[in-house]
Length: 245
Image (cartoon, rainbow, N blue to C red):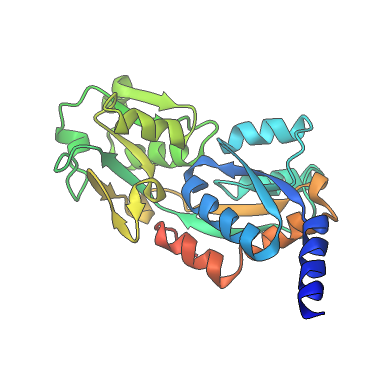
């Protein structure tokens, strides 16, 4: 009887498990993939992840894309969607605060103070598109604060999102670039190359908000995912990638 009850419980869970389409800011790809695996194992619901730039997700959502949850790279896009009736009121919360790094795949190339921005003879500096990617906007703010924007503008190469920006640098097409700390951190340490962790006072806080979108209203899987993001297990994963909470 106990075995039969267990099998019935598993069958009920499978029958009621949801697939949740989730729009995920590119900087949060690695932690969210781990969280999604744990979420499925713990709840039976599956998070179907789409990765990209927050600004592009905004355009897709306003044109009817069926995402149920948005994990944004900023806090302004979810608030805007809420005001426009595309997101469910009172479901928005900050799931992480991001950190920006100046990174090179070459060990020893980027110094611990970021002076290479003024002294380096590099040809290309990669940044994410500041119009669609909050990490790109933060990078431009840093260069403005340091007074190097005019000098560096001819050397900038723009990635469509922070994932493409990272690819420019990791492939060597750009000697260095501004990327998310989460992209180069493993188990609390920068795993490769050389980096300058940009002090938080040099740019506006990269507060990343999650929100339930209208297609997810009343969907158990979407609601469960938002709750799971606040769990101790998810928060521990998030912190190992260099985010603060």
